[in-house]
Length: 151
Image 1 (cartoon, rainbow, N blue to C red):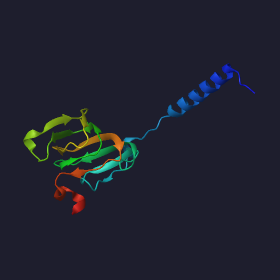
Image 2 (image 1 turned 135 degrees about the horizontal axis):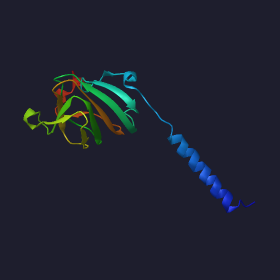
Image 3 (image 1 turned 180 degrees about the horizontal axis):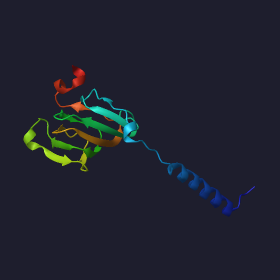
Image 4 (image 1 turned 90 degrees about the vertical axis):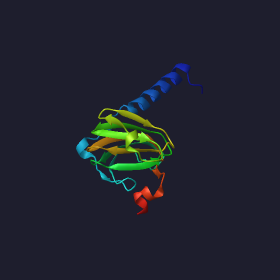
């Protein structure tokens, strides 16, 4: 039995609408619901917001640095987008930590950190940022002795 063309179009339109409605549902988390834990790669605090950067797929994570915290030169295997939420991120690229090369990114700033580009950052005061990307993501320190996981 042949299904009339108008019926097939209506069925396709209904399927498209139902899948669109599935994406229209909000997923939310309030700041007080974030669960921060120590990040063994950097010594900072990290709270997953969406997904898990260690696994394939999109992720969002919130990261806190205490005043004076330094992240020694490292790279990541995939691009990472960063939005500074509070405080100021001091950021520079290169394989050697050099405070004279820092550019300051105050709250509200955005950075795109490219894959495999060595970089480092520091918080002059307490600082929080949100990182977005596609996993799997990792920290690859230029000098393995700077990796807290090796201690």
